[in-house]
Every structure is written in C-alpha cells, then in structure tokens.
Image (tube, rainbow over all chains, first blue to last red; front, side, top):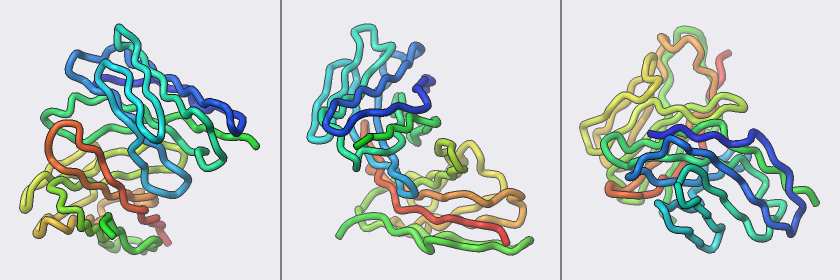
Length: 111
Length: 113
C-alpha cells in the first residue's frame, strides 16, 4: 500500500472549515484514499473514502487531485467535537485487507 | 444495538502472565482485526481473520496469539513473550468485499504491574 504524509497537527476555529491535507505521491491506480478519525481514547471512526472523484457525505468532503497524488479532507463547519486525530490511508483493498494507520493529523478546534 | 464490544476496558498484567482481551461483534461481519496503539502513535496491525478458524499475522504478531472459533468472537491473548505489552488495544470488524469500512470497538488499555 502507498505511504501517506500528513502534518502532525493543525488548529481550526470553531465554525470555520477545517482542511486537512494528505500526500500520497506513490499511489497506484487501484488504490483508494480512506479517512478515519479517532477521538481521544476511543476507536477510530470511518469518515469517507474515494478513488478519483470528489466525494461528499454527511460528515465531510474529500477532494482528490487530478493526478491523485494528494487529497484534502474538508470539515465544512468544524465544531469542538471534531477535535481528534485524523488518519489518511491508502489501500488497494485487495489481498491483505487490513488498513495501515500512520500517525495522522491532530486537529484542535478552538472556541 | 449492533456493534463491537471489547472487554475489559482496563486490564493489568503481572510479569510472566498471559492475559486475554475479549472482542465480540454482532454485525455479522466476516473479517475481524486486532490493532495495537502506543501513546501518540498510529495503529499497528497484530492479527486479522477473514473467516472462522483462519487468521493471519499482521506486522507485530510476536508475543500475541488469537483464535477464531466463532464468527462473532476474536479474542487476543497477550503472552508472557510480549515484553512490552503496555498499550491501547483496538479490535475492529468489517464485511468482506471492496471498500468495506472498519468498525472499531472502544478499546482495552493494558498495563503491566
């Protein structure tokens, strides 16, 4: 699976959009981009995933660049409850299916 | 309610002791996973299973053992061979197939006395 690079931490003001970047320059054609988040001392929670098209659901939007070498997770109106560690994962979802979680980005939403 | 239940939430191990962490799911998922998380770090895969009576080693399987006798259950034993067992342990499950998302339990914090 391709490796991902994320900033270790970010701050965001409550009510503003949080834009979390992820680089995955070695991504291959059949690999998807997944985002999960982990609130302190809890299990990670799935947010969204995509292959090449932008995706949106009730939690967030995922913007993938045309060359697929990077992506951005957007939380449109961050709240204090969005404070968490956000993991960007790339996986082909074939063979061994278990996802590999790196260190992620610690997002702190400020009041 | 459907979900994954891990127990206990906190567990203490004495030197040389084996301990078993429980993971049960009622989501009818075929695949189950165990991850270890150290403070400030990401998750590392210990073992995973895609079918009853079969499981595969992950990246850090040494010092751990698992069983999958029932679809709903995937217990993890931390053996005395695991010299640094203090960590947060997370169990997850998913359906098989493309792009199936993982559902996680609330974790077990294991500490050594």
